[in-house]
Image 1: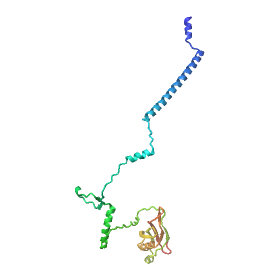
Image 2: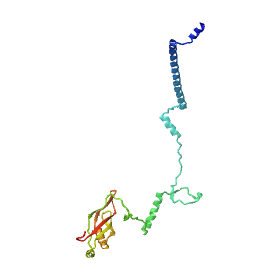
Image 3: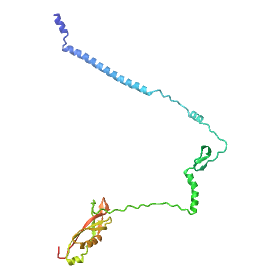
Image 4: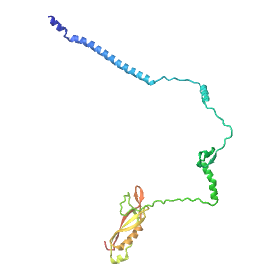
Length: 247
């Protein structure tokens, strides 16, 4: 019976656990608050100690009146030394290499302004005697605009447009012989819209070549545009020679 009672004293029931839970909970919260306060206090204490270490030696502020400061500054000024006797004015000269023992003590090196003032009278005398100053001046001519290659492609925003067309004259020999055909003339139109060169690139008869070139050179065009600026460009003009009653 005694053993049974001893075993029952070590067994906890619901009521005993509730009593122990409240006590242990209160103890745990109190310990947690204590440790948190301890950590926070340690942190702030270390910050205060580090600031004191960085501060170094205390700063001592000294106050001084303006009169004392002025008197101290006047007393610390070095006394002026007066040299008795006249001082020789330095003379201006052109630097000439001489030994140190022969160099005069009052000689100074002339500046650029002083040298130019000394050379001005000599230059005036030379000019009065008939001397002339010559200087070679090279004038570079502005580069001329080169004509574009006839066979190269030129990108343009707007091609030249014919504003004045001239029809070629039909050669009399070709009329009598009943010769017809086409001629393709390649024309270089400059920046002003004027034909500069004309070359026949294809022709059915040599009789039409010269009259086609003459007609192309008498025509007028609007200039080609590239980036909103006029440029020179090659264009092709076709000319067709037909007789009445022939297509």
